Image (tube, rainbow, N blue to C red; front, side, top):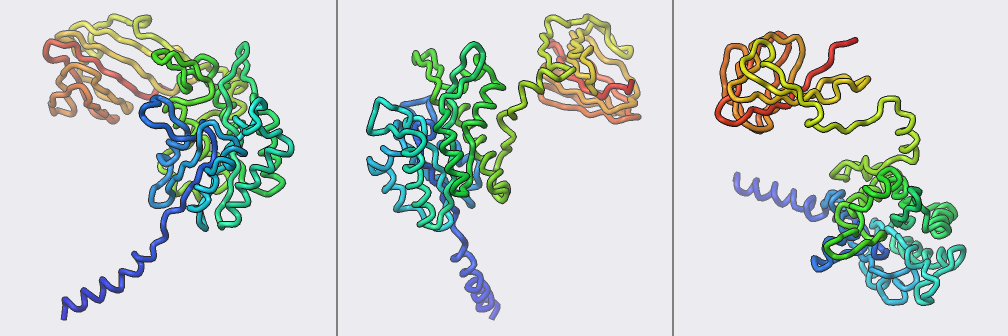
Length: 374
């Protein structure tokens, strides 16, 4: 009887599993900035290759149909559109990003003038999605890394604007990837942004259009961040943070900041000291950012040389020690335990502690605690 009841329970549960909704498909129609590349093209990647890494696979499955060198016209003329169209179904999403190759006036098989022909070809993709019951989302072309005397140039101009105008006219979701990526590149700057693109000396490449992996991940992040603005419900299916890039105001904000960001080198601030709090031996302190204004915490490195220690003392504040290298003996509230690289110690107010170097190697600590109120 028990076995029969269990069988009935299982049978009753089966329909729920059998009718579980399949993941929504996310189709990408686009060019070489989004398309996939095999390992023989490493380190080159399109942003579409990294999109799945931001989305829960039980909710969304990425189908990257982007093709290198295609415009909105040639993607259709060469049959890539039809190959994609047969798999789109109700509830799916179609991301549409063209423009790079539509601009190639020297090639009539790809060129589309921006005011009329380009949006007309884009409407073919929009019509397909609507016909299938899918959601079309227009994506302006990702920016090229083109600086002139420190100023980032807008190389997409009328083409990006044509996508914006079409989205407004047709009441379509729009990811303004041109604007998002230009803001990111301006904030990164000319030199630093090279690392995201195919500037690969070993391959004799200086390509300001296509991405290395870190660039593909960044642009995929910008796409998802823009998508979340269109559809806030997407956030519950995004598996990693998307606070990437920078706002358009980033450079002005940086100039207006009264307390600038800093980089210091420990070799410039090394301070020999005896063991603190009555500790034995010789130490070297590295008081990082000691004079930085409006900083609410102390952060320092301390090296306990052979035989050195920090003497026993009672705490009035929270303090964290992290062992970078070496070995030591940590005394906490009357207990003793060995510590080594990778160990972290938290001392709370009213506890007592001490630490001493052990073995032949210097004990190197990172120390952090809140500053006293001024």
